Image (cartoon, rainbow, N blue to C red; front, side):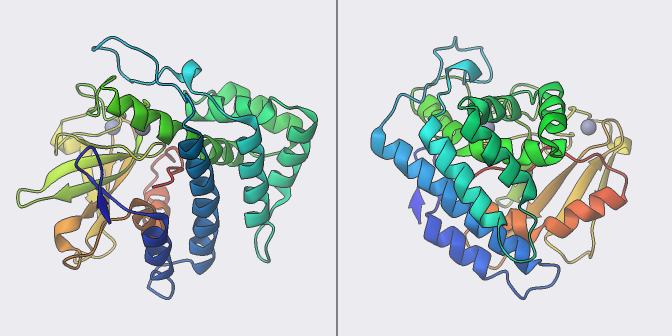
Length: 300
Ligand SMILES: [Zn+2]
Ligand SMILES: [Zn+2]
């Protein structure tokens, strides 16, 4: 474990893989999903490592102080060769017994003939996202829009993460969310998880794309900013569980929340582990009639 330059905890790939492996066999955990996440994470970290080694200009835009998010989406560079290798690794990850790799195989085959396809998909899935583009591509390649959204954001995450960290170090934009919005101040994406921390239960949100951690007011919907308490509901599977969902009747969305004060002492909070450990809460939210949010694609 190391301390990141923003003061938040950070961890290495081995810590995250060990944390994911430790979930296997626990209640509510899908072993296949955990194994899939491990494969994805290793592939995403390989790209992050290559980007760091090359010290490329995966660019943060130079924005004015007020501008949020910090990243100019058009300035984030996606390396075609690394995207192709990440897509191949994804194809290998889904080409295992019990998993359906048809969608990614079709995408990878199409990408061999259309060199710009993976970059276009990554960019349009990461920023916006551009649903019209995803639907049109989905019809053409016979791939569900949700699958394209997930793959596109998974492909984009390492590039956006590296660019976001550089923007933060350069002092561009804000690590914090814009006022009354729970969107990431670095890449503009919506949060994937929330935590309550420290004695007073201060709330932090974690970006579903770049993994940025930022403070947000406790009693407000992080998606639409709703602050009327009647509109906000907590749904627990079990009252003693340190993980639950908070739903919003105004925008019909939800956020998975982890009370870190109730986790075993000394245990590091590893986001991708928490994401896999709370998969059952997404199903609970679906049963509650909440709309599905953006998939968690961050490689942290
Ligand atoms: Zn972000
Ligand atoms: Zn809301």
